[in-house]
Length: 240
Image (cartoon, rainbow, N blue to C red; front, side):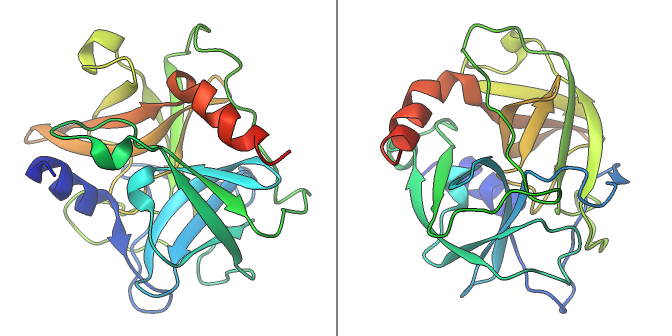
């Protein structure tokens, strides 16, 4: 595995457990109105307590990043404050088959989690519709949210969901068609892996990793969801 990929994966995947200094919150973001994003999902390994974000795309499926895969994953729906988690739901993990095979690349970082108990949809738990095709124009006005650190290199605890607005860069700046990217001093950080990049009210990306461009600027990469629609439908349709 490429050492840079390994390091950035560790940067985004934060090991934590409630009550012992969890660090949550988008860098430069604001606190989300409680349950204003009912599709958001908190994901945690029950043994290692590593945590990621995700989002509900069907009553029985959550989408997240492939590098969030662990052996004992549990998902929590309708979460605002991670100090008050509902009962978790066990899942079966379906990471993209090419993710583990990539050498010196940072692509195919996408995973579907099949809930063993389908979600009951209500005001605090709901799905978000995926892009319809891979040809639709993506709005450059985006938002990302999650429970990650509030500073890139400094612990700053916030246990509630946070969000921040971002501007999508042109595709040529991201290096590959399966990648979307943003740049700046605000955005996702440690613990935000797997969360959605929402552009024009549609989840277009999955938080994957970031790297420092300059001393005060970070380039954040997101898996381009529309690039993987055939694979997504193949997995989900197999459980209709």
